[in-house]
Image (tube, rainbow over all chains, first blue to last red; front, side, top):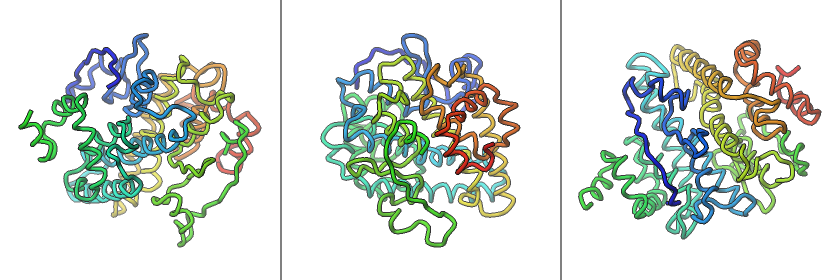
Amino acid sequence: MIGAPHRLARVPLYTPAHRTPAYLAVNPLGTVPTLVLPDGETVTESAAILLLLSERHPEAGLVPAPGSPERPRFLRWLAYLSATVYPPTRRYYHLADHVAGAVAQAELRRTTVAEQVRLWVAMEAAFDPAPYLLGDRPSALDLAMAMIARLSAPEAGFAVACPKLAAARDAIEAHPEVAPVWRENFPDSAPDFAGDRADA
Amino acid sequence: MALLDLVGAPYRIVSIDINTPDHPTAELLAVNPLGQIPTIAMPGGRIVTESAAMMIAIAEDYPESGMAPATNAPERPAFLGWMVYLAANVYPAVRRYFFSGEIAESETARDEVRRMAMKELQRDWRVMEAAVDPAPYLLGRAPTALDLYTAMLSRWAVDQDWFRESCPKLAAARDRIEDDPKVATVWRENFLNFE
């Protein structure tokens, strides 16, 4: 969306091989994604990458500028997504990292889904998308929200619990620069999106 | 609070007692429906939650304080990267450690959640320790909000002897920022393990 030239290096996920020495040398935590800047410096953490790329390309208008009236609200919800919503989103796929045994894991799955629902509903109440979260222009917040929503547990029923957020998600996912990336990365996600894919 | 003191911003504190049955109060829920603390009301009534967002927003409102490197500064990528790293990795592990009962019911499961959370927290600190090179502050010669956020989070949950032994570079940077009298005053009020 910002028009920056880039080269994509894919990291196979969900295999032990994804934490290869070569990848860990770039990002010791082994998390994905990692951005390598033109000067060789690396940046991890999706929210930091979104902020940094958007700041370096202010002409794209994807983040409210530092000091602008909309900035605190933007930062608040970006941090909310990455520090509050994303942890239980991730936990759902890694239950065994937290407790052993089928009973305890089933319980953790239940509390994790309940937490996801509670957090999404709280965000739903705070927004009136028109059609994007911050108004008539897309922002990095739409991208972060749509991505985490795609990863949320199917049982959490995001689209039903949060119709306003789901509409904003649909709007950003229909963006011509976003749709191809989403189709490639979320091919097996919710049925409504599979419909888009069939049309493509 | 320490950041507000450092940038010289006027503020008024509303203390929240999380150990009363009234928590979260209607007053808190009116500004933050999730009842999270801290919550800040900035000039113009703008409400910000999430510590990392609050610190970045405050620091950017006072650019002359240097507490947030400017968007075109060479320290900017590291500043944003570590602020989000702490918020999205370290903080959730601290939270799981203290509030294991929110996600696990049985005593056994809670113990395990706590144990795994501590393991993850120590790994997160070690990864950061290996990557930083304080001189003497985390991003160079001047303190930033990152020093404060790191010092604050490192005062929670982890054994302080473990932190000093396993993360000597982070501990040294922490000593520097905690030497500031404004920071020390806030820390003495909030951390039993400080001094």
